[in-house]
Image 1 (cartoon, rainbow, N blue to C red):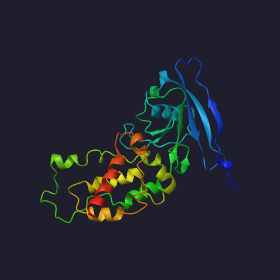
Image 2: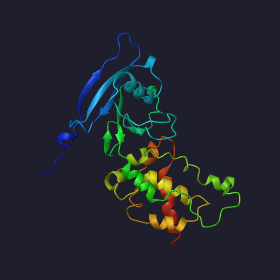
Image 3: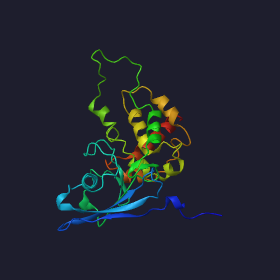
Length: 260
């Protein structure tokens, strides 16, 4: 018989509520997904009331304050706090993004925070990125060239050549796009996903790289590349304003052009 509800151990319950201190004037509630694999319990949402007068402007500031002053058991990744490292990626109000770049004032009502969707959870807001980074290694993301480097050791580019990789090198591998891609949800074991395909095109488009043919050969696969159906969730959710769908389309075009 078909089952149309989540298994019992996947149903998210209501957890603890931490009230704001007396006298707080700018109170905002943070509803945060919690799950600890060690306690055997179901996931839950804990609610934290923060006085924004004593909190930084970004959602990450709120999470750091919760961890430092209210609940030290809360677990999440973060590093640069400037939208550079990509490590703090999560879903805020239903949108995959970086909390270090998301102002609290831009979220209406309760700030609802969950881990990146459709990825295994290590703990609380920490997704398991083991598979994603294995896929990243599979595209060999480094410059490959048989031509000897110039005596000074640098392979220079013109401004025009450099412009070919604009919108590609800025990717910080936060995987917001990958976690928002339905094709990756269903075929993540074989489809590389938008973040990795954008990174693959970054090297294909680099005029200094001499392995274009080999890179296209590796990608010409019904699952690794062609599971992309141009849904455009990836482009819509990228917190850096990049366009993975465009990069994927460029790879497909190059594969067709070399066959005709």
